[in-house]
Image (cartoon, rainbow, N blue to C red; front, side, top):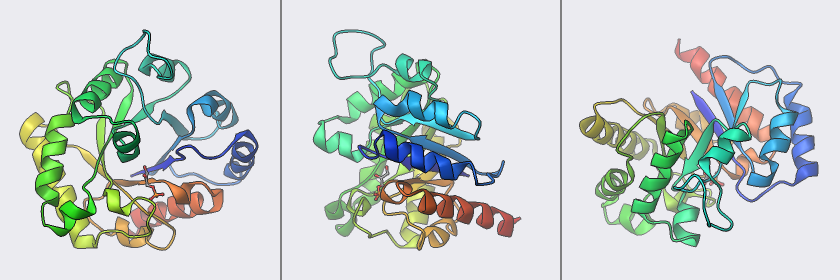
Length: 246
Ligand code: 13P
């Protein structure tokens, strides 16, 4: 079980320091992995603050080249050097605001894998595609176009675009159907099993419902991961869920 906190472009040095104070009073479980994706300039700072805690760190994106004249970009090698274990690739905000195409996302994912980072590959349909009944078809195409050829250390995050930051989530049968579909498509193409996280308006109130879906392997949390109390409540719900299902 994986609980990932995507802070996006939020929290500054002072708030990160306060966040971490509370983490030291919490007892983490070996059964649930936690990972924080802070803003890039604070990766090193956060890494130092939580070096004694069982929490991994990841980058929110990386480039498809290791070095070069790419102003404002970050190399997967730099992420690794600053202590990152993970990287998010293909987040819908990157697709929308930075025009990242499926092909570019595939290159970025491959480059991250080659640099020995673990990839969280994000996929998600629009409300239009969901309402028209095209969601499965759309996600299958997006997945196949973004899937790196050398498929190692990849988890998929299913993040419906219409659910991100809106408070709306798909119903549990739609989440189950989509996660099943993603797992089948990946297996058909690579002969490998893949873990699928759910992302989009995950919060303290709906985490139990989301984790009750049998093929949800974890969650990618945005807004609700910015308050340490909520982040830890979501983490605790995952521990409780695992303990109840044994
Ligand atoms: P919210 O949890 O704020 O909807 O964001 C989800 C997300 O985009 C995580 O990557």
